[in-house]
Amino acid sequence: MACGDGAITHAEPGSLLDVFFFSVQTMATIGYGRMTPVGHWANMIVTFEAFFGIVYSALTMGLAISRFTRQTAGVRFSKVAV
Image (cartoon, rainbow, N blue to C red; front, side, top):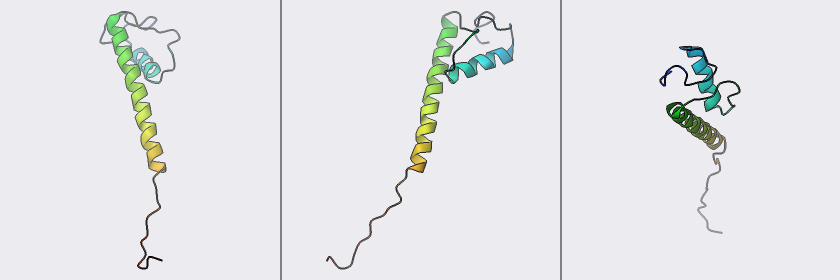
């Protein structure tokens, strides 16, 4: 919507719902199908959203995996060496 009407093909002019679905398709890297960006500014926004979506997914998965793979073993010291 920031780029104006006609920035996304086959989207209703001024339709927030079409722009939202287009944004979700971009961030989830699903693919466009019928709606595609038109123009330099629309492609720049799509590039930023795609990059942000991939980085967000990677960080979320990294945090989730690091949470479940924490070490629980500890080092115990003895008073007698042998």
